[in-house]
Amino acid sequence: MSTLAGPLAIVDLETTGGDPAFDRITEIAVLQVEGLELRSRWSTLVNPGCSIRADAQALTGITNEMLAAAPRFERLANELLGLLDGRLFVAHNARFDYGFLRRAFERCGRRFQAKTLCTVRLSRRLYPSAPGHDLDSLMARHGIACSARHRALPDALALWEFVRQAAAEHGVEVASVAARQVTATPRLPPHLDPAAIDAIPDAPGVYVFHGEGGAPLYVGKSRTLRSRVLAHFSASLRSASALRLAQEVRHVEWQRTTGELGALLKEAALVKSLGPSYNRQLKPGAGPCGLVFDGTRLRLVAAENIDGEALASLSGLFRSRRAALAALRELADEHRFCLQALGFEKDPRRGACFRHQLGRCAGACAGRENVHLHLARVGAALAKLRTRPWPYPGALGIVETDLEAERTEVHVVDRWCYLGSASSEAEVEELLSARRGRRFDYDHYRILVRHLARRGVRTVRLAA
Image (cartoon, rainbow, N blue to C red; front, side, top):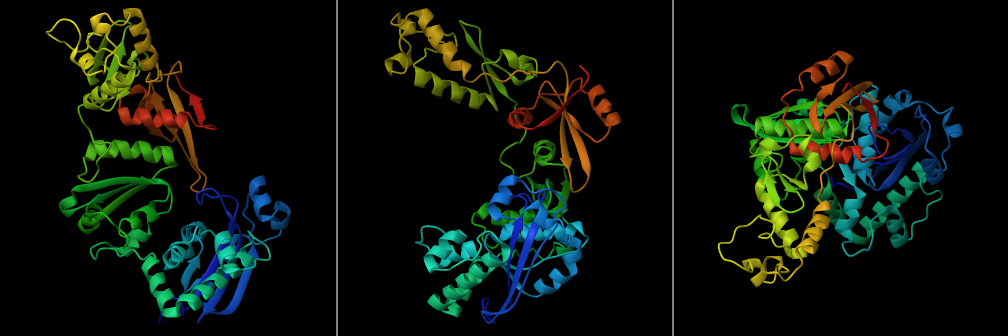
């Protein structure tokens, strides 16, 4: 039977927000369609067990008062599974709706898995020259009316009308071929256990692909682990490297983390410790390299001399010596510095340096630029590259909470060195007592700087 003529479940959800790990469903609509004809419609409000943000209320018109008497999702789970069973799951931006439903079923101990069709992708395939493919664009393009936009049942009915019109305009078989081409159907290699993959939660964490003999192939991280792992086996893979990796995987290990920061830190540590063959970034190397400008001279600082305390004196920090040299020469070309006058490059010839002859130096080496003006320009340009010194008197704990798992972790950091993650005061103390000799890591530094620059990050001051 062709894809679109088969049994469909056209689904639309409204939610408290866009993150399935923290937000919850507030309304569900399911249309059962067979032979492109509507057989049944079902919709309900859902009590999310939490307050709806003002922006979500303004968008949907669904208020906390409306949801107070609505059933919780666990009361609806059995009925909803019966409505979806054996049907192609159809939704606009299907990954969103499907992900929210899977997480909701997981929270009440139920398993849900379905073949999905995203009508955003179907619209792009059937109408490649159309200017937009969001639901409002589809409705405008096909003259589809919607009685209450951003409510589950009216939106689902509008989506059904789009599917019907697309099938009528292109023919059911042509539209079905397009649907099959964009339907997400990851095909796992025969040596991987589907049940083991399905046991991976759609939650933040890290995963490791192992090959023959347990050799580490790839380390990855995601806020939705299962979806990310399955994406490695999607039929839409493009690159030869991605295809080879999918074919070589023999075993998948995974570890759930309390949040995105924990996943990022764990991924960086695992890549360095395991050395997986398919990871291009985060791999261990000679170590970071810094630039120091003392007002008159410029020099490189090797990895063994870089730690959290030394960052305050650096005029720039880079992943490697090669990256530092490339950045310095690019900056010198842009501002026409004289690297020879700064004592960075040696030239046995007297007078103008070779870069000046190429027009890349303003002539401090040949007396054509005032030396003090030159040094001031260098200092101003390098100031933009300065590293962020450690702004705290001692160690810091960055708090992450997984509300679903009811688990909190503290990521312990001292002078930009990541010491580890702890779930108790005793574990925090153990990490602090073992911090002596902990090496500075460039990738952890970059991750931590970005995270602490965000608003609303929870931190606790630890012992100095």
